[in-house]
Image (cartoon, rainbow, N blue to C red; front, side, top):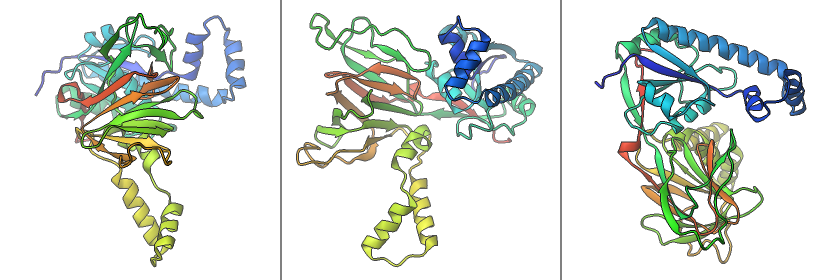
Length: 365
């Protein structure tokens, strides 16, 4: 078993209040409360959720302290490569979103990540250990190395296009300044760069305006390059197959009912429920599957698109290349980081064993 030393870093979730503090540092606390109220937020509920998270977070930290770990605590604004390099293991406290944030900064397959859910009323995800877990027991099992390694497949993206220095990172949670050249800047050479973040859940490519049609050329093995129009392209891992991938591709009872009617097949209400559940359950695939699953969301069928016809609207693939024919598009990784993906930019998506995310499984909890 790989050596696991006694230092870990606990990264906490980003609350709406913290976000406002970062974005609007000069506002007084009273003004921040008023701002949250104007945003339609229930301030009392936010405070309650924050206090519950803080209580569970302190219990979690205490458990790792008592197990003999040296613990360093950072929030999302302090979470960086330097903090990660210090730790032998990264621990996230929050929900699946916090876990994804933790994974986004981990470049090495050798750095373990474990998540604990400290947001029980708003997060029932798949990536973190549940709140019912005994923190002390979990920390001691980790300390005694009584766990199994799990390696979750991640997606690497290589962008080819015109970049002044590096592909333009557009902040979603904590915005950063945009610095890329315009698509018409012919003085900037075409270069290729691998994006610094790997996708644990999914890659999503689309125009920034939801009403704008997304124009792309799709290239997957075994199918001719195809020009398609849709509302976005989602490329998911097995880990992400319970997330957006599931929401995009799941079928409703009403649709199954209509299909039975059209097929003139006798059925019972139980048949509808069973078949719908079986189909939706089949959308999930293993977290360590090396394949990706792409979905062309709201694919537009017309006499001229897809061109040529024959490309499945959704399918497994070992790799996928997407060429942008968009006006103002982005490529989003795990819903947290986005890069410009405008006309002429090429995105090559692959999975590799050496970029998988190292996590743990505690069989006795």
